[in-house]
Length: 113
Length: 111
Image 1 (cartoon, rainbow over the protein chains, first blue to last red):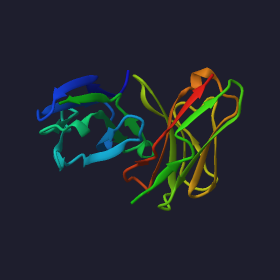
Image 2 (image 1 turned 180 degrees about the vertical axis):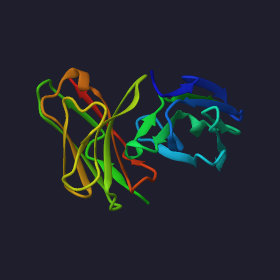
Image 3 (image 1 turned 60 degrees about the vertical axis):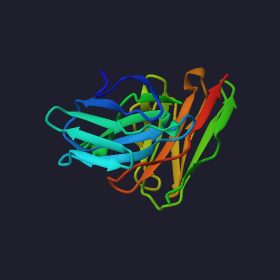
Image 4 (image 1 turned 135 degrees about the vertical axis):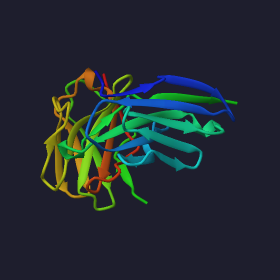
């Protein structure tokens, strides 16, 4: 069973609308949680990174939240644009094991005009 | 701006061929990583290196080897390519516990 589960697997939204992606994790203790954006055919690019003590982090129209008690994170996209069409990957970094990264399977977002 | 480059964006090889995937980073990062990415499975760590000539197995090292002769270059080697190694290969680098910067990826097809 994957230790980082993302939902939904895919999402279609209309341009200008908001959406929220979910990430549930079981790995612990973790040192940080990151959200990456991956455009088709490209490598992932970091959007946000949060430590255990942070519960929200914004990067433009992207806002990530973290609830360390329930081990849940979300990524909220505000006023979506066509360029937001991509896969969004949740990544948890383990405090032990040399800061090993555990990746979620990603959520594929398609923004339609 | 951190730059991680990979030698090829697309590669087609035949079963049994030896395949070299090259990764170069220009930020003097100690740590470098090779992942493969498959639909539904996310990114899986193949090998990583925390210093020149040092290497550690990741989660799925079977069928792969690596070479780190210089700090900026980390090579992934498929000694005898097989069809189940058809995948997207991603290289990443980082300093200590910080964010990993990814290369653009190499889409390898083994026929």
